[in-house]
Image 1 (cartoon, rainbow, N blue to C red):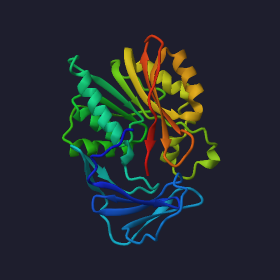
Image 2: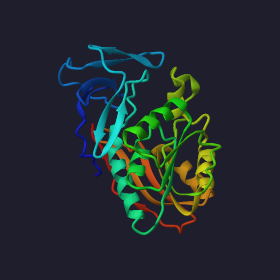
Image 3: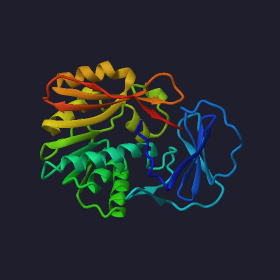
Image 4: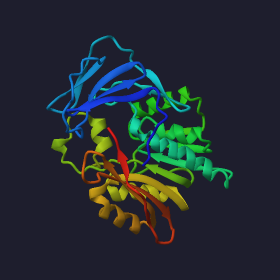
Length: 295
């Protein structure tokens, strides 16, 4: 089991009835989470901000006191900007901290035998994984996201961490071509095929979650043209679409070498699968022990 145990500034305090109570530094937020299907054990009143979800998509924040527009939290030796958005997010997915630790480990391991390491982070959001890779010593991290405002957020995270070895690029995952092929691609793509009528009102959130503008085959083609031969791809995708993913990867000569199914501890079936693929490698896959998400 992979658990991020270095959090000091973040804590999930309570969960229930489709909500979670979280501490971000010294500020407590109550946010919706549709995966939390169990009942609350008590009444929650000790929050500073509460997000009301709208039936038409999106929602709004209600605050008990005036909060700063943004503040920062630390994880290990990284610092990130936190700001409640109008689509409930804060700019950080704290459960991903275990992956930041893994990125830190893999970058340092790679650099023991190589002088340089060039990484491409596609659909990179506010750049937490980007900062982890750059801070670990990667020669360069190319950070690509389709949202200008999100890239500005990533730029602020760069400043907070005194990072200069990152190139921020506003582009989509269909057409992007880097100046040089990279050693590693980190890839967290949109993977829902939900009809447009089910997307809600937030344009960026729809882009981030649904692949209408980023078909799976086009996204993998983008990875393929930017990754050097024997380079490595790390990404996650919906478990229910695993057969489709494997077919497209095989067509692009990206050979899956490791596979790990991710389970919510309160659900019977895996919802997400984590994959490691190597361009032009020999066949042979290792299925690792499942990863469990605790809430």
